[in-house]
Length: 130
Image (tube, rainbow, N blue to C red; front, side, top):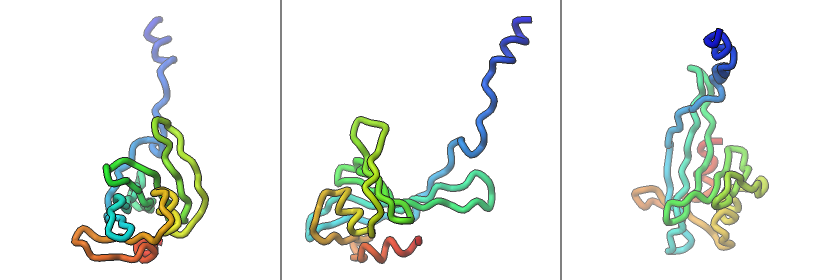
């Protein structure tokens, strides 16, 4: 009888859409303001749970020490990470350069560079995946 009760109390399996999904790095840039390196922006894609599902792209933003500052989704929504908390703050919908300025708390013009040091305009990098 105890076995039947234990089986009745077991949690149902979680739906596949709630489970872990692979995340793929598509591209990475260094973020600069003038000659000063502020950190990195990574274009990541969250893969779907089933074959044929569309991947979800987003831009992960880190400071120079590799700490996560926040992210920008493909529609320009900016979310800033709150240190020592599981929450994040929605900072609005902005073009990529403004979004990076908010996350880095910088007001001057920002520039991206590839791993090889080739400069890339901020908005050009953002338009690649939209």
